[in-house]
Image (cartoon, rainbow over all chains, first blue to last red; front, side, top):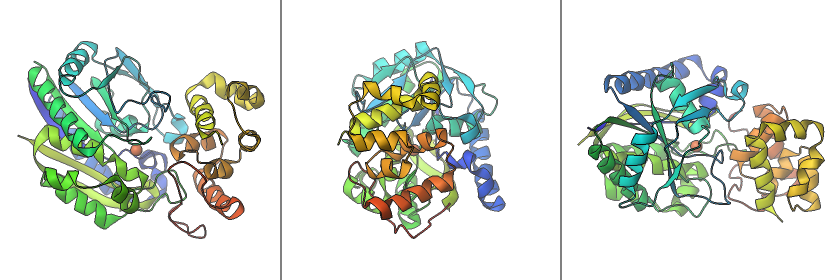
Length: 272
Length: 107
Ligand SMILES: [Fe+2]
């Protein structure tokens, strides 16, 4: 039928793995934002949910790194991390091989997306799923943008990927949701872990919520690395989501939570 | 410097439960498939996550190796800070440190 939902959320492993080390009030407020996102996603009655993540060397590696990838497997499993470490139990997730194949075929008209019939979910997909699909009922199509191993895809191509996802979703009879997952400024898994450039994050989220394409695409990777760390490269998934949705965004929650190593975000965007 | 080979070894270890079992019993047998320098071999075998960080291993790979080695999160961060003092700045990769080794940002 069309794209019926678009939202973004953080996916840092500390959100679950170090949940007990955040202040109770902060954690609860963020979790409430995620719960609101879950309810909105469910209310959109999606036949399938595209989880667009920035994978972290769980599946894709520098031996053969796709700029864009999308899943068309029967099923997936995760987390690839130790479930005790991530504090998310293992699950097998239902895929959408036929729909995935049709979406990918359409996207290929304008973006050279790689496809994958195997995919093991790391925290980039599992942390969002843990909150947005706690009972593992949804049908999932994973998608990935390489935000880890440079050279990285340019931001204007991330925008084009979003446009292609939208076109493909609108051409399918199913109801499709899109959730972009990533971080804004962060320095994950390094000694700088916990550093967050809140002003930069708020500026980015303002550009995102206005869906100001030129402003979002104006960041250079040099600036992003300097101001937002290597984790900042993940703004690509949020930009792609904005391109697909086309409307204005509504940031339901944003707050830096250093022990989670990211400015924690939950937001939706109107589909126009 | 064979950061790619070193990273690939850790990437495999993170994904492959059989390799994890081998790592916990006979870690040196995993090295046969990878062309590493002596320093990289020693860093791997001695589970020196601080040195692996200095050698340029991406944290998205390294943090899981640290967890496999039973190194708790704050200890993992501290070992990287200590390694900066011991070995000097990160030599390769994209993860140069941006704060002071004496600064605990979070955890
Ligand atoms: Fe990430």
